[in-house]
Image (cartoon, rainbow, N blue to C red; front, side, top):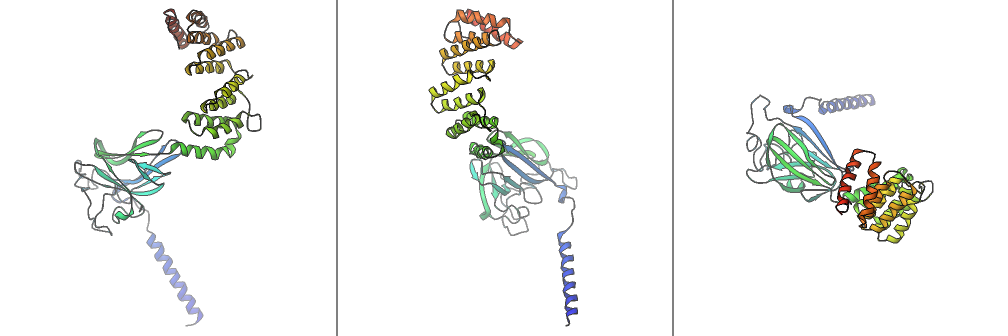
Length: 382
């Protein structure tokens, strides 16, 4: 065979392989049984997410037959079953139709209290009559349906309790409870629902990791973002030592920080949480004397002191505010609160009546009227 013949034969073979390869790819057609593709995603907080990808069959059969009340135990049989195809001799239900139903976790989570790593899993269920079902997450997320199910691929099994539900023509997954650290997903079909709880056990750690990264990048070159990071730590009472370094950077006059009432009071808040109350008090004295301190910010600090039980200190702050901002709302209301806190109801009543004269809106007027009534009876208004 000469070289020309060899080249012709090779070209013919390559052309044949290309054509057969193209044919093997198939074409795009409507989904089998008209079971439409569906995807639903729910965030837990602002970082973690859960996505369920499935095909959605309807109760009405493709030929128009009414299958209402004939889904569970009939169309979808109870227990593990041989499906007549594939390598599995006993398969659970694919919890959907057509291809494998999958569930994707963006981060490590828990399903019904059991840990599951971040990733995509095949979602299956063992349907039972009059007892809990078994929800299965399989490491095999790419096989078609449950035809190739193998228990050795199980990543997680949990019991879930089906419940009666309003009629759903189309099989659907919904997220029926959405909280900061967990969500509840539920499968609905016919007159049944199957809920299962998905939670993030270390949500604060996820936020902290994200915040730390942001503090080292563009967001960290902004004192407002550093204050927000500190306030998050204070609200959760976590990571206080590192939060103090963020507060110090925010409150220092530099290209990323600015000394003002907000940054100083934020630093004082961390010091208080760390038990350094004397140092915190010194920072707050500096904050209320700062040119940026508004009458409302000082007033809010006085109310904070009352809530902390430091009543005499609160009165002093309200008096300072009145001297610094005379005849300005809400200094008289502050004095009323301060004197009431220390039990001087006579003085409190005096300033409450003065405050009522310049109250800016109806809610404050109503609050003062109610406060005056209490003070006249010798009761604290705080």
